[in-house]
Length: 178
Image (cartoon, helix red, strand yellow):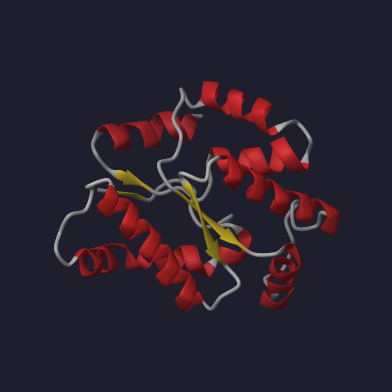
């Protein structure tokens, strides 16, 4: 809530595009579905907490739990966090939860196949974001792809770098771009 009030809402009021690593949808998948609290119940609590604010676009980088956990092991980055040490059953529930949430909000949650190469994930993400920006008349330049790619390439590279973990460690909320 603090992050929303101090960073996101002021940036949106100033006309910035705000990119977050997770928001309401992760709560719906983790707490609502995987922990069994109910997607609708968690959704309603989040609507209250966010004053009704929902993302305009969510990229769900989909990676099967087996593949994601294998990537974590092969990356050999040290200590696992509390979610990574959960049993496979939990990870499968989270995965299923994300898919259920995407079904419920398919108008704004777009699936990216995270089991592709980094370049393919990047290209797919870029395509979805550009289409969204064009459809919503946020970006209207003739060579929008070039403009967007130059300005946001570093952001997208960071997103792709952590794609198997649904951007878990990417941003702590300080990436605001206008």
